[in-house]
Length: 517
Image (tube, rainbow, N blue to C red; front, side, top):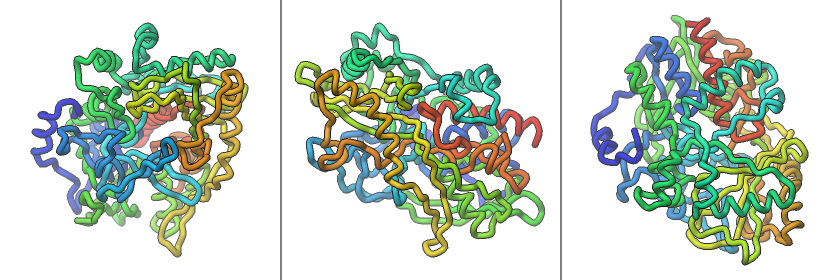
């Protein structure tokens, strides 16, 4: 499934792949193929369990008209967004002009899901969020872990499960000597210099990019990927998404059937034991082409924090699974995400060539409650701008609830709840601006708007470990139902969350296989 092998991808796509059949009886059904779902499917299969892996998004294994699987960030097309007719980019304006554009409706890779107070960005496809994130693979500092997952033993996580996750994900670190000379990281070196001049530590951040490939991109010996601005809508060559790590290992077991463009709508106890699961098959316009009913002995909810939370809240409220605990839907947070840009002086250019893969950050967590990625702004032109995605210690938590009038799930996040994140981010950037004599950019998120406080890339919570579930993700009220994704983590990880999601899934599935199978 290597995205670089376009010829091989075409051949693979030409072979019809078996998908889940109506009336099937399966030992284990996993809903979602992101980090948690991929870990669960792999370890169950390695333990000898046959698995059906159901994914709402596409397989992303067939090149488009341009010969590439994924669309470029600067020229979004129908591949870019999930069932939208207009893009909704996190950075919506540039130099005062709106940059969103009309696109054909399609089951594209990035979902910008709008709730009352926040836009939640999520990956859609086999590989989930790994397809669309920046690949920053950060293990939290051990001293912060108790606030992230208070019921989990830090010793086992840092001795066993974080190392297992980092190995499985292919995590690596940029070569600092190459970083110092690479044109594509001029923006990050400016960020480092300014952070250090204001007394903040700059830290290199591990990532799942193939760093040898990026060096070849810089040298011009391979097709460009990170250096062609590919990030928001998938990365064609260098990034080690789940397509290149867990998913090939899953395929090699021969025990996992993957069903793309399949959406679970309900789960109910089956009369003969196990659970009846109703699944809709979609086409690329989002239309339902078939409805299937299957029976699963055990069901793993791994649809992401939002997907799992919405489904569980609906199942409890509509009477499909009425015995689910009252904590279902609670404890949801945005990982304190907030974005901003700064305008540098003319003598501090950030470079027209920028790697889309961030590799460093500014750590003011202990003093100011903020960790800021020094992020790219890969426009292809010199902008003299520094851009940041901050993760903050925002204490606010929201709740999902069923709305019987609209037959849908609402989230009660309030826009004003982002203010603590802004204040914490300001603990870094006010100081840098004062030291450098610079100002915030006001043209990136609207007209005269400094903060990108309308979004999150890191949704967490909604089926919190030890509350909605036991300490290993078994859902309260039912045997054989599990949450195994970011919904288990109560709202914040202090860093980018996917390594923690993966490590927690590795911990939980090991226990579940040992005791429940």
